Image 1 (tube, rainbow, N blue to C red):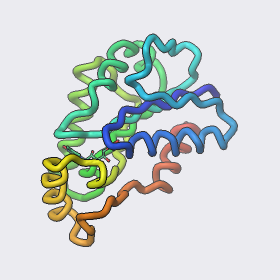
Image 2 (image 1 turned 45 degrees about the vertical axis):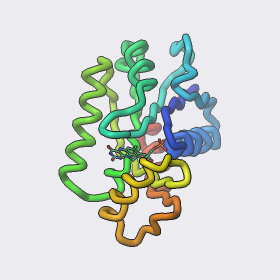
Image 3 (image 1 turned 30 degrees about the horizontal axis):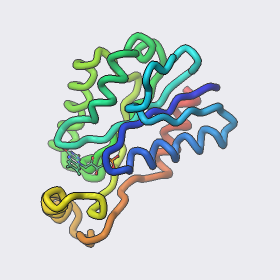
Image 4 (image 1 turned 60 degrees about the horizontal axis):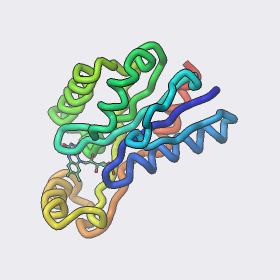
Amino acid sequence: MKLLVGYASTQGQTRKIARHVADRLADGGHAVELLALEDAGDLEMGRFDRAILAASVHVGHYQPSLAAFAEARRDWLNAHPVLFLSVSLAAAGHDAAEWRALDRIAGDMAQATGWTPAQVVQVAGAYAPSRYDVFTRFTMRRIIAAKDAQADLSQDKEYTDWAALEATVLAWLAA
Ligand SMILES: Cc1cc2nc3c(=O)[nH]c(=O)nc-3n(C[C@H](O)[C@H](O)[C@H](O)COP(=O)(O)O)c2cc1C
């Protein structure tokens, strides 16, 4: 199968997730194109059988490059079984209000772009103080301290469950 894995990433975790997914798909013998959505240009979707798109949540929104990409290609995206990986730190926890917010964020994106993903999967991202500016580091330290009492606030920490991600992608591919 010819597959597109497109991503939008601010601190790099969603890029890592997209690359991991693309590598596993390629291991399975598929032809995979890994693409930063901001570089999509006039990418023609007709040459792909399926696509996985991924973006991360920052202050309640995905990156603008996801919306621009999705809006421009919504007819193709709506007509194909596209998997959307929504990456966040809320998905690392079990707070019901935060999970409702994630549903709302994905719903807002669908409404704004006209693309309703066939499947949305919430993926836990990473805490990455090494990549934050001073203000962001301060804000994120407080959020992580409240969320994860075990975390060393000075160290980057990955919450992504790689095995669960692979299982999700393989199930989507087989469906
Ligand atoms: C400034 C900032 C704002 C964030 N806002 C949210 C948020 O509103 N909800 C959430 O669940 N996670 C939030 N996060 C966590 C990110 O979604 C998480 O760190 C993710 O792994 C970032 O992906 P990226 O490295 O691909 O950009 C935020 C992170 C930063 C740095």
